[in-house]
Amino acid sequence: MYEHDVLIIGGGLAGLRAAVEVTRAGADVAVISKVHPVRSHSNAAQGGINAPLTDRGDDWEGHAYDTIKGSDFLADQDAVEVMSSEAGEAVLELERMGVIFSRGEDGKLGTRAFGGQKVARTFFVGAITGSAILHVLFEQSLKLGLNVYEEWFVTKLIIEDGVCRGVVAIDLKTGEMHTIKAKAVIMAAGGAGRVFEPSTNALICTGDGLSLAYQAGVPLMDMEMIQYHPTTLARTGILMSEAARGEGGYLLNAAGERFMEKTAPDYMELASRDVVSRAEQTEIDEGRGIDGNVLLDLRHLGREYIEAKLGYLQEVSVEFLGIDMAEQPVPVQPGMHYIMGGIKTDVNGATNVPGLYAAGECANVSVHGANRLGANSLLDTVVFGRRSGAHAVEYIKSVGAHSKAEEDLANEKARIQALLDRPKGERVATIRNDMARGMTKGIGVFRDQASMEGALENLKNVKSRMGGFSIENKGKVFNTDLMFGLELEFMIDCAEAVVAGALTRKESRGAHFRTDITERDDENWLKHTLMYKDEEAENGVRVETSDVTITQWEPVKRVY
Ligand SMILES: Cc1cc2nc3c(=O)[nH]c(=O)nc-3n(C[C@H](O)[C@H](O)[C@H](O)COP(=O)(O)OP(=O)(O)OC[C@H]3O[C@@H](n4cnc5c(N)ncnc54)[C@H](O)[C@@H]3O)c2cc1C
Image (tube, rainbow, N blue to C red; front, side, top):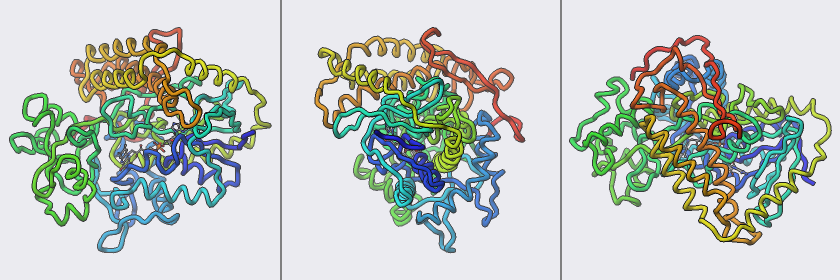
């Protein structure tokens, strides 16, 4: 019998920051993760975490405004105010817990410039910021008594009378299925990058959390807002961190021109990510690229500087393309990187289902709106991870005994056995690849009605094949084949919500840029899209809209 006060799905930064908060309050808490917690995608974050620290004359309003402008005014400003005003304390607290941030010559915490921000306020730990924070949070929460279900895979949320009461999960090591009961569940299951191919995201970023909440009746908000990062390495899709441009790297076209002069004369390479990605794609589409790429040039920084500050990027470039960045520019292209959309929550992480919270990349609070600023995601995970943990601790005080129900477990066992019993059919990987390539093609850096309808048609085709795939491995122990099949089902839900949102929004805003409607339309579309799973609705998705919260910054034209 597995029972806890609070169960956190996900051992990335959002999940572990929530765990620290709940353990500090003395509640019984467990984290469940399909991989060892420190292998979560948060581990891959290199660039840094934003915070407006006052010791260098920065202020939270400045960070808030840059974030809101970056979001193309789609972020809810009350949520951004919370994030920005709590940022300084959140980052200093990480340092007190043991994260050894890099420091400058003066001994103060060192910063680097990141895109879309007026001042340098990105704090970092060499090229391992995510990893460093993740390890410290893991060690701190273990010290405080965290329970960990490591390499367990959640297949369903238990919802009784509209209230979330726990999960059904597979212990991947044994293949056994169990119910884990909880008075509150915090969804911190990360992003959905792999709904697109290629992507900078780890293969485990399959949108499980978004889908689990969506199936439980929670709306997914602004799912059409997909971030394409401007610098992913040619042919591999590997992320070349924004730190490369933050430290002074240029972007060049085939003629050797710094083309950002045309679109963002003030911010140049450090304009918002959506702006830079579009500028690159335009160069490529208009024949000024090099084999579908533009060039990232660090040569002027000098070998010593590159190796000291951007050693990891140099390593990747040499290893994968044989290019020494001190001698030659490296080819890069825009690549899918992050999903701004997600599970709709309030500023405490609460969803519309009592007992269910969400934080981190799977959630949409909304602080990133139509485009996230680099280094604001790590900040989002720790600020809203903490808040959801704190609120869940309050919530469980009003919850009585654990649920007694076991029918979800029996149903899930039967569903998964039926999947294993299917006759030989199509391979999961083939369907997954067809879905993800179709998403990139239709919902790309640029999109229009025809491309989005193409993505929808592709998705219908993919869905019609879902009854026909088979799980080749019938074994119990570490059946990753089964896991890939279940992940594909989650990904299809995410893809449907993305396409529905994209087809609904009749304007261009942030990352949602339509070549057939190129202007932002505040009169009609200063609105969030909300996607509900609804079998009765067209294509299985009901779309509603809601107003954006404006507190003190009226929308203006976005210029960089
Ligand atoms: C290459 C890369 C570099 C980045 N660099 C930066 C950066 O420098 N700065 C920045 O701000 N942002 C960066 N980002 C974005 C940022 O890292 C992520 O948005 C953030 O770390 C997500 O944290 P999370 O806790 O929400 O999710 P994750 O770290 O993705 O963790 C998700 C967790 O959920 C678990 N899980 C998922 N599904 C299930 C399931 N079905 N059952 C059980 N467990 C499950 C996983 O095992 C995992 O533990 C980067 C992203 C990438 C891909």
